[in-house]
Image (cartoon, rainbow, N blue to C red; front, top):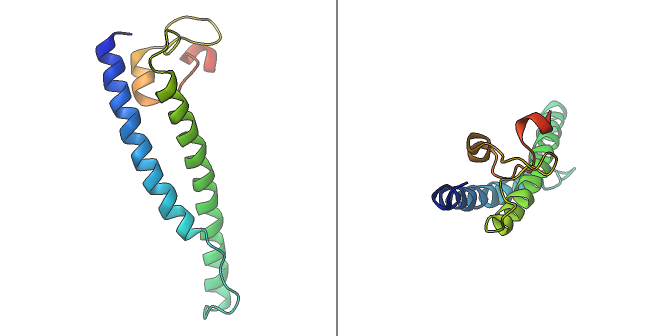
Length: 110
């Protein structure tokens, strides 16, 4: 991986981290407990609880991806960044552009 590609990936990672942090803040607001005395009808309360459950799942996924991206950002200047941890071959730049937190190539990930 060239230095130019690493610089581009670093900028993409930083942008994605900023977006995820904003998304996490919004999701944390949406996943606050629903007060039982809130003036919702029975069906509406069930819908709100279902939506809250979905938002909790998205929040968990976003937090996990944020952690992985932060780790990738710390590793980006190391010689092993972009090298598969299984086969020790370079991970394709196309994969790294889509998922810069990847530590395995496509073949080893399958």
